[in-house]
Length: 276
Image (cartoon, rainbow, N blue to C red; front, side):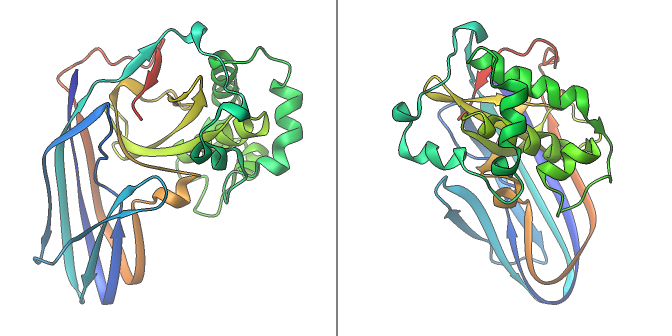
């Protein structure tokens, strides 16, 4: 078991009545238990907890009048990931997949697998099927993109990233997801807190459905999948944005952290990790 202390502090300048929808709280799974959790606001507001979407992502809703709003979230997550030998993990046939997995074979807003399907098959269709093929796709994305903060925005899609060859964690994951879907492997986007991430921020990785369960992959290689605390999951980053705003609110300060007493969380030679 690995214990990870996580949290964030967000400060907003609210100019007019605004509704904030926040996805910053860690999720509960059979491999992730959340303890000592708190979410507070200054000024003190009613914070409504909602479970939304087919994946049951947890969302907090706040209705805010004009003010300087400070939000503080903290929790302790206990991770007991499922770990498998990569060579033993095969790809699942569509006839074997649960119905809720099938949606992750389709194109989505940022992952245009219909546009990049031919490219995906030309590059990766000939490879042996299984965990190794997904890892090869992630390795290709890592080797062909340059990690450049500020090089993309909220409109950048996987095909844009493939052309410009730069991006940040969400872009790396979007491209890897798209290429996996392009060769018939269900894949989805995961948001979370990551230990030792520099600079500290929310992190975006991907999951692929293989051999009857979801496995984590990080195409950026900047954080270990063994030290990722899940927040939410979706077709792409649009489903798990940390804040959705209706009104006028400017984020003026953001601090995010994930700390573990276990200093052995290396990004090298990560095993096949499942925390869904």
